Length: 106
Length: 425
Image (cartoon, rainbow over all chains, first blue to last red):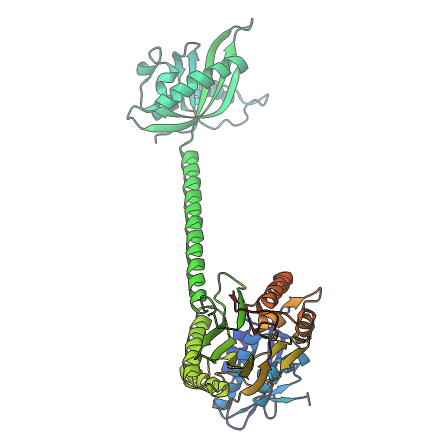
């Protein structure tokens, strides 16, 4: 079990959230809170960097959906970057690969 | 409680060459020390008659010296229980040992109240060893007794709170069990010519799970089934499960197209839950139609792990439903249909990801889809109840690695040599 860490850093396009460690039932609410605290405006981009995510269960998926909904309702876009293979498989199983823009790390 | 004040200070006691005034003071204070010591002193004859008593003890008892000396016995100062203890233990032991310390007793005072005390007694003997009298010191144990009683009271309160918490926990466990059962069919219905078996593994008896399944006849030839997993745990998950189950049942009664049924559920969940608090489920919904001695199965998946078919000839087919999306998360969700024909001896298996996401081995790897397929291949061909029994053993083997609820539903047709219908739970 690795504790969840969330690091925010501004980018030219908007904001980068680096999410590392375990995103599970107990830690997922923290990602939702962190995303909610982010002020996004139309046309900005929220990049969620998952390169150092160690574990993600269905609660983690729920948090990612909440993050997406929050951004979309503000007119911003969400990009998932460096999605680990396990999570990519889970996102494809649940059809979320059709919803999330997933990219390699630039 | 009246307590005597302490005696005067005794600077330089016992030090040779001290000023003569100190000697006078010491001599003077010996009696003073006896009378006003911070403890009670008592000397009794061998028969218990009180021969000498200090002012401190008289003060505690509320008695005068004239009432006591030569008139009362030590046991007269004790409560009934104390008298008994004194006669049977205290006095005989003191005679044998010559010394007895730390005895807790209660003294009766003149006002009728009781004074908890700690007694220490010694037997004074003559030069030739004959017992002469008994000297006793009496310490006021009121504070200590109060402290002990407070400890005892606190301990009883803690024990009671613990008992209450255990009872509450047990009640909660029972309530949760009833609720959980209400979200699942009591037994699978008996459907002529079809065999079905199911299992629900509860990860925690203190937490409502979010897996669900159902199987019910639509008419003489058609049977509906579904199995799924709602997000989250606890009462919110149970509420979502309930909404999901009844929405799907109703949808299936109106429309036998599983994709359309999932769309109805999608709308119902989106209508009920908002974007900030997304509540969704994954589900497989299907309808099977009896055609001759086969079952035509049409199903649809919304983000759920693929169903497996264990064929009568030992093959294992995966019913590919990739692209089907979570139900209740997005308005434009699409769901993936699949079709298969079950021949006699074939068994369809639906499961939730508690099974495939169990953590196994020393590195806590996910059990995974491939492992499940190999496991199924090792069993095929098999009947629904044998398959569910084998999977129950597999789940048990996962031990602590299985930390999520898991639902299993297996539906099949008896092999051609095998007749009759049976449902097993």
